[in-house]
Length: 205
Image (tube, rainbow, N blue to C red; front, top):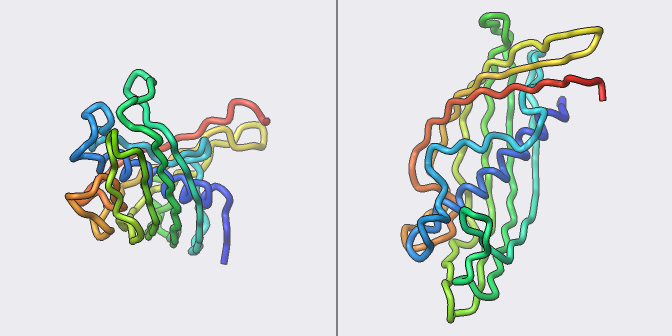
């Protein structure tokens, strides 16, 4: 089993991005339009090293766990939405990922595949005199299936200075979802997400 730090960071970022998107996009029934994220928005992986993935053939398995808490929601201008009173949202997210780099080379890059299976527990509470969010509790999230082309890093003066990856991700809506809930672990629909990631290291440090 090979555990690569950059791959781990990327998978961890995907997990948090998934939970954030699900919470924000699923707040439909009672929440203002300004809270909703556009469905085409790709937050990607929340790491500056997103452009780097292993190029040697082999598979890696990762397990991740994270807990987040929020007590306020802001509008598009960064102002707290006063309609939420004594708001508290707690989310515990877990994800399992299997990533495999193949021996296949395309345009000098390495063809690879990965899948990510998240699960979570989201609970919300607030003063009933304001907006009350209905959560979907404990369950599985949507499954990510992806194929990627990891290009070899550009080397200058004996160190990598730039690396990039092209990826196509399909997200299957198999997770816990209810149209009557504001906070869901699933988006409730299929998604096809192509994206490009690049990382530039202009300085050794």
